[in-house]
View 1 (spheres, rainbow, N blue to C red):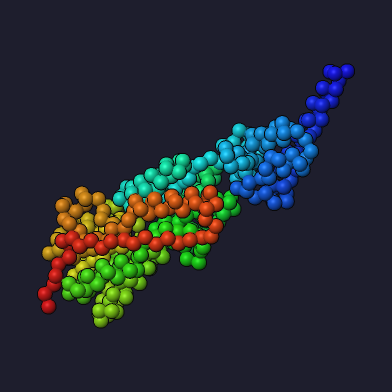
View 2 (view 1 turned 90 degrees about the vertical axis):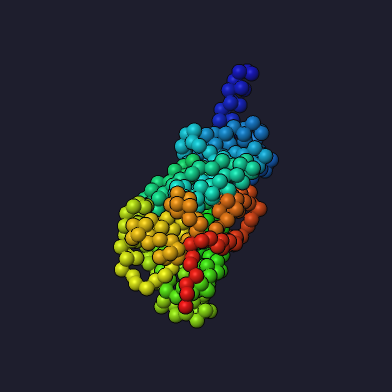
Length: 376
């Protein structure tokens, strides 16, 4: 008699597991009331709803975790997993992992951003997955899918530099949004987007650097950048400086350089472009990579800094490019930016920040020896 009763009880438990699992999947997949990243009702609430034992509830949830529909965090509860993991046996559940997609870490920009970000995440108990896309949108999408599959909690995105910058980066953010994965942009923004961002005072600091050139009697200046929003902001500051100092903005020649992620090729292209321009006494490069390319182009053209051409760049590139020359430059607080990006993404993940924000960190203008005072 006892044996038969035990068999009935066991069958009943299996039926109850099946019923609970079916109902929870229905909430997640069909009704979509429990979206990815959402915390499911507490164990005591499920006990009350299904009228079963604690062990039965725990067994049902354990099966759903094994099947990739849910993941659990000690001290926080049980949550709905990313869609891409649903139905996958022994899938990787979400843990305290944050991803970053960045152009590269060859230069100080990438190196210092990563250092600041990783330092902060480590303090908060998070790990970092680094992805370098080298401005290749296909590579970027490969990384996006990989990060989602690894169940990341959030992502820091250095918007990829493509010809269709706005469309491509909005699509990337939307891809993460569909999986309920928060995004924080770093350095560059996406116009008409409410995505969280960590940026610098681009227009203000570019104004300051350009005014310094104008005060040193430079009246015809070459600016080297591209078409992304951050460069347009920097160009706006440059234009304001020209207007304030009564110098026609037509005296500013804007070279739009499409990076090929090949410094030798880009140097050759830029040197050819500069060689065709006449009467310009200074060059202002609007990021670290363009600064390195510009200085190499000067060398190719046998132009000395500052004797033949004055020079300012964002983010002093690798020292080896300058042979000991002290460059007048704009120093972005890169470690601080990485640190701020880490804080922003963790605050969003842990629900300490509810609305999108844009944090502006101020850069410094550092006067070196690469700008010559011209005589009237």
